[in-house]
Length: 551
Image 1 (tube, rainbow, N blue to C red):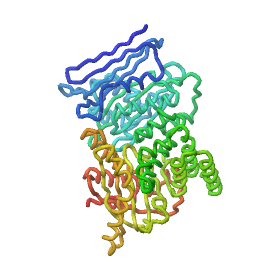
Image 2 (image 1 turned 60 degrees about the vertical axis):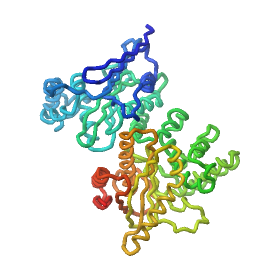
Image 3 (image 1 turned 30 degrees about the vertical axis):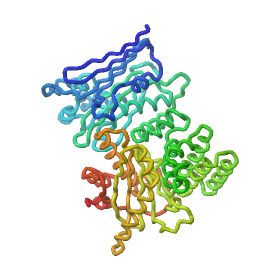
């Protein structure tokens, strides 16, 4: 059957339903359809994606994909005890221990009491309650609980016993991420790892004052010739968690241009390109523009060298087997010699050599933390200035690279305080100009604060978060700004908080505890301040109320 059909339906409550019927079950079909969806979330006319259903016929001759836009608005309060009766009955059996010997069933939990489930169901749509498998609903309730009130993502992967052998259920709960973006990111990663999506369901559940949680569940099958191992699923889980926070440039690099790079290497390369811009632009503003740096380093001819630098960085900070100093020095020398001999373009060679210097001047990174929001580097400040520069060297420099933002924190004493400001250029051209002077602006503001604080114990510091909001609507701009604040400050906590998880996943060449204090500056709002203080307390920072002052 060769049937291609696109249907658009408007529901009485204002929602719009797009239905796509296609012949066969071509690998990557879901990703293809998501890329063709008409809604642009960067405009004020955007309707949120609220539900997705993807089905494939048993003989794989036909697939149907349904995308529902707009929030479900019932004309009167729904009777959740009626709509969710099957779920409540199943939960009651779980609580009574009926499924204790079924490893696929959830264990009894306080979350599954009738009272607590009814309260939770008030946040769910009628469609979600009516069409969810009870066991799957409770599984997703557990994932929801893991991320509720946070900015995190929780993932569960299990072999499917109700479908053909060799298929797997992937359940994902992610907070405050645009559902369409979540779906696209997951589909791209699954394709990258040679998995095809056979079925998919997406629902959105409110999370009180914290926003909402997108619940995505998919039945996936490995493509022919793919050997499925536990390590593949571990890597997939890690990369799915990163997808929410990856910069679009990083995603383009690893998904579209060089899939062999993998997420970590791609993220290191784009971070280093951003970090190099304010350094290299001092010597040649036009030749070393932000775009030229990225284009040079990622050309097909030179990407293997950039990848080798990323490998050097990853091996040096691998908590399982950190590269010994002697081996690190030897590999760095060999890589320099290879670049000098083989890279004929002098500008590109200079950039690649500077990337090696960045590795050498990185003292700590959160690259291996499983739940990080962005990539953070604790730098030796000498990397930021030329040797002939006579200005005072800062005590410490932090650099953070995340989704649509880069940020510096500069301080001039071990114990220092200064404001955090958000810079949001209106155009991509202005963003590039601000990027070139990003570090110098942060340095100058921190030094000015240092002079102001000369008569008190605390030295001066400053944090400047440069956010790319070009092309976004006002609501989209605000969404990205708030996410950037969270990602930046949580990454700082990664680098200064001590915990079992951090100690096991971080190699520390600094060798000393650091204490940082922030304050609000331009475009920081009370919502940001409250979140930062609460997050610092949750992460175990000793003085969370001092980590971000109210003013």
